[in-house]
Amino acid sequence: MPSAALRPLPALIFASRWLQLPLYLGLIAAQGIYVFHFWVELVHLIEAAFGSTAALDKLVTSIGYKTTAPITTLNETVIMLVVLALIDVVMISNLLIMVIVGGYETFVSRLNLEGHPDQPEWLSHVNASVLKVKLATAIIGISSIHLLKTFINADNYSDRVLIAQTAIHITFLLSALAIALTDRLLSQSHSSDKSH
Image (cartoon, rainbow, N blue to C red; front, side, top):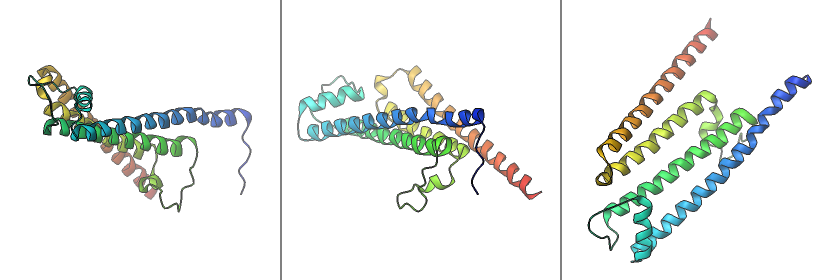
């Protein structure tokens, strides 16, 4: 059954959702920058593993690692910090995909991926509430990686910074728990309303 034509004002308001399209395209561009950054760091890591001191210097500078002894070869701490930075990029990239795909599907227009072999399993039941919980979980993962990088490189940070980063991480955890609990309570009350 075809839907009735909208009056001009509701049609304009409904069409305004397309104003979000440039935002999602901008996030896709940001995703491309993250991919480029990932490969630059990976190439520097590979070159440093084969003895390039210039690549090693770039890595040490990019991860902010400082030590009293000069770093002449790739050591375990530098490798660990670089790998954590690469994981961080991947996790932020995953977050971007969730926002781009889930946000577009939820707020702009259907992607019509039903039956597509590459459809993300979470997309079939995504809504604003599910997206919020998934984003909160992803942010906790990113915060965990940042905190781990800070603790590995703790000598280069003040106690104030270490305490602040730990407090921020705990705040993210509590916020995610609150969002998940609120979502659960709302879905339970919604399902109980339907049963009456």
